[in-house]
Length: 172
Image (cartoon, rainbow, N blue to C red):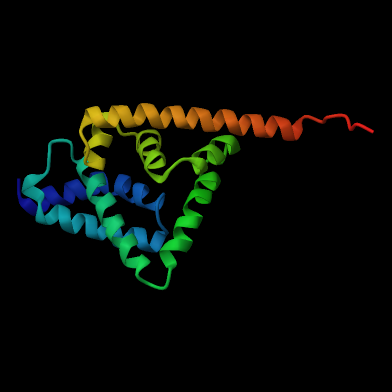
């Protein structure tokens, strides 16, 4: 198959998934630019693509996004404001479950990234390992721990909300 045709088919099939990944992590304008960068890398390394390209593409997107964020950080403290606003954006995206959004907000960035790759991006653990650049066995341990921390955060969030909703008679 011609290189150009192969690339166009690859782009047509996987660009929406990569763009969705980027949109959950940055604004729409940056996502468009970063998507273009991901597929420039893809074009350059087209012959090296694995049989299942999505984890590889998401790994490239993750690294391109990391470079983008570091560049942003060099500009007048913008990275600090973005990092402070990144977790609350998750609460807004988890529209049907406020407790889940607040629990995700309490997790570390790495735990949140891992859980969202699997839950929102639909990757299997082995694919998520490829996207994050870690061994599958390492990812399984991290996933177990991240799920445990999410479960604990959900439990704590439920306890806080039940105390807030539970009217206690006032003592005179």
